[in-house]
Image (tube, rainbow, N blue to C red; front, side, top):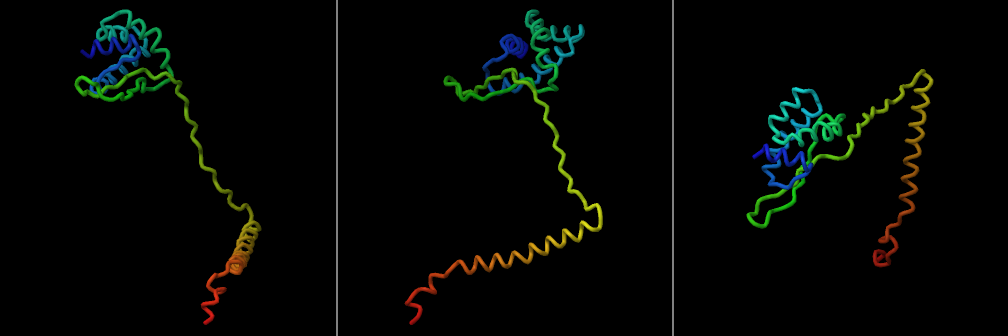
Length: 158
């Protein structure tokens, strides 16, 4: 059964089947594509032993495998469709991945520059002290700008 599924999958590059069959088909199909990437005679014979149609084997080695030459794995995708109306079996589509694999650049965290001389450290401390002195003054301005409505109420004067 899986030989026929793999043959149909590689022939059409996308098939609709149940979830469980698609999950079982994925590793087999990826092994066949890996054999196609190897491209030697032994790999072609191993693929021919599993895939019964010689045209599909030729398609695997000539067209499908070269598309995934730079990709290290993950050639297939399973998309869940829903439930089949007849027997409530969960359906999904298994298909070949078409988009190009983009290599991610690793970002290195920026290092903080340490003070090179002893003169730079006192300047940094002085700047922190000035900011600390300005902060309470800013709080006092905010407190004086906010008025309590209870202070203006005439009823509290009694």
